[in-house]
Image (tube, rainbow, N blue to C red):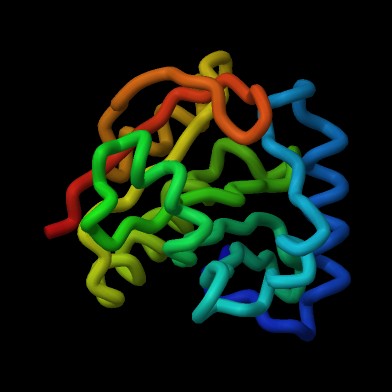
Length: 166
């Protein structure tokens, strides 16, 4: 039975292995690669992103992040016309291939959505590769609505989604 909980530093090795395994098994450009500063900030939930995971026993099998840094969100806030609001991003959704199709991503997204509400964010945004129907379906399942398709982060084409929280 799967358990969903915060990923702590004791799972750091499993976390980075999960990232490596998943990113090496998905189509090119479906996930914007992490920069080193992001990997270094993985456990900074106040300034970077609360990090939650799905565990099968002691094995980390899936993860999701809620990017909370307003500095990091500044470009998206401008793109969405939300400069005066608190905005966070639902992202970093990765699940080991053998665990896909079990509802892990939407469950983790619902956890992160509740955190966004508790922290008082006005809007939550997310993005998915236009040719990744599973990602888009999971965002819609938790209530986000398609906003527009655009090029982000150095030329990655993405469908952008948004949900007003309050």
